[in-house]
Length: 226
Image (cartoon, rainbow, N blue to C red; front, side, top):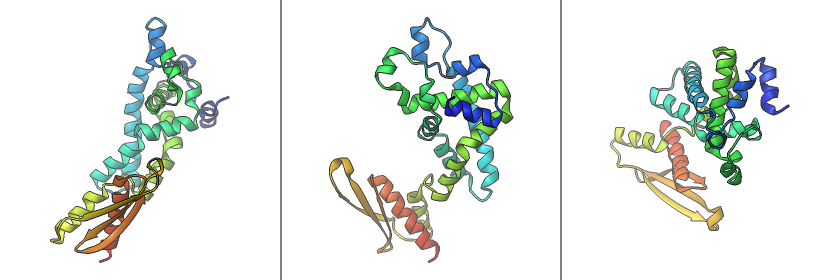
């Protein structure tokens, strides 16, 4: 029994056998087998169910977050990268029915295919066992990611927030100084953000953009107490 099947059994969720198989039927496989039905319709439904369940959860869980931050938090949690990570934990790739071309190009571990399959499974759960079962399945797999994203605030655009603080206080726009070190395949960047002629935050990350965001977040926290 796969991890997915174990989890569904633990949650008391029953999925129709035909829908279960259909949720893993990629369009490449469907095309090679005479144009049989693929999982795209289930994916369409699952995406809609996922959006409303996550939206309601973050709306109720974080009453103090403004609409813009709620939207960014949701976007982070339902992104292809996040869904594919969950799909890998559930070993969804082992169930995939793929065309020969996708098999040859390691389609079982492609982020886009895994994310789409996760949505299709949600759709299959919804059709087979109803909205409450679909919600339980989503909460089991994504609530921790939602909490982690909110705690780290990685979903937020800290550079924009810092610009708004500077504008409110009549200061010039923040200035970033970024340096990098290490070989090209292991490059690490350190950013310092200068506000009102003072270094207000620093950040280190594998990309310049992320390093600047970390520095901006540190500056926002520093200025919040100033």
